[in-house]
Length: 369
Image (cartoon, rainbow, N blue to C red; front, top):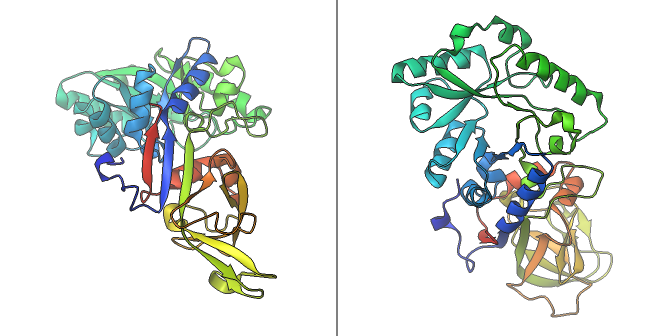
């Protein structure tokens, strides 16, 4: 989890990451409005998708969210310390062996992905002499996490003694493809698996699942990337507000003659005189090395030239008046002119990877919370 006290001072940072917590809250409201009264939780794993889980969860708490999901127990402990005891925190990967008692004492909720994890959580309940809440994840067809049909069928009522089943959940593999028949097959499999367990609230929707047919609603949705502005409906207009803006500082500007090699490997050579700027952003900051993107200054497009380096990128600034761009100026690389999803498309990846890869050398601004 990001330590706000260690935020890099603006004068010392090579780039500025602005996170709009007001947009996170608005995205949560938009998702919640689609749920027809079902509860809207929030996935804040990977440090809030790289944006600081404490800041994001704090904003969502103020918006009324009370169910949070992280991947690892360590994330759950950090989040509990940050937001206190006002919410449920689920550990999606389950509790690793040996951590059960500590997780239970911290009020974290294990997601049992196997009969083995379930038995270990029940043993912790016996040791602590208290009834422990948990969620049961069943594998409805993604083949990643969750109890199989055979595992669920092998459980008997005694396996739940000392435990409170708060949620039965599964995960959709193809929710971003609304017409994919896998979605309906998973829904039917989920219903069949739920019927084999004690009655409990159910959860199937992820970010894209919220935009599927109402049959997928159930009792609780678990949006993640959509909260942070990633489009949950690929191929259609993004129904979410953008959340992040990334700007890199200009280190220096240069004037290059024709036939000059630029960057590693001289992968780019000038064909005529060229004005360039080198900015303080690179793959050490999580910027994809092979992304043929652009930066923007006051709406003017400044293409990348040459390869992305570890700490710097070279821009073609010929479209700007000479002297307009100076050392210390900020150019936009994610923002109004170029979205997270567009960068992902240029990089051959998804917005999730772009966000979670953003580094901690930036000066971070949190606005609108």
